[in-house]
Image (cartoon, rainbow, N blue to C red; front, side, top):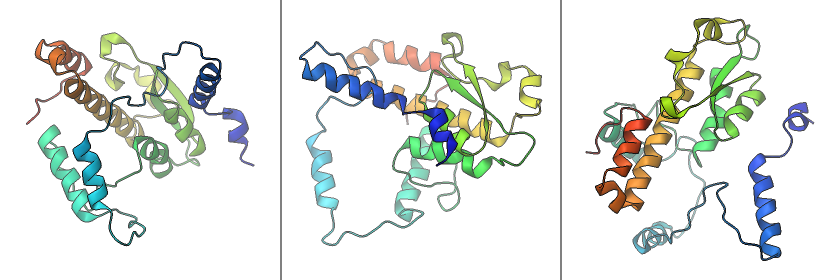
Length: 218
């Protein structure tokens, strides 16, 4: 068995789910702030679209995903972030953000190299630290603060920390930072969608400003 499994132990969020079940069995008051599951009903038009899209014969998807989906993703990224990406070489659908974050170090980290440090922001989901460990990296978590909008700011770190023998300002760190910013923007967009009254009064806009320079929605 991979010794990293014993080193990391159980998944932290699973412990919260076990605690939630135990409290529910004992009929204790429960306010679940652990994993962030939606509690709002899925709009009916989305459910209808999902049902209508189920083909008569279901088959496994291709490894790269449907090209029209990748094109749609690339078009959305350009509209939303003013960034052009190639749908054939720079877009890969995943079963969720955690799948992509976990597998990213496997592609950009060389466990046999001298520099295997990986910077990641905390607090954050456990997958940031766990993915790089399975890829042979050495974890170097960076504490995120409200002053930086809870963003991993590589420019604020000491150069020695980026250039030491176990870590460098490589593509892995930069891509991970960019992924965090995109996820922050998606979360803030979701706040505006679910809390339109607050958005109209500038609350969501203020959160967007604190999280970084976010371009207006087209």
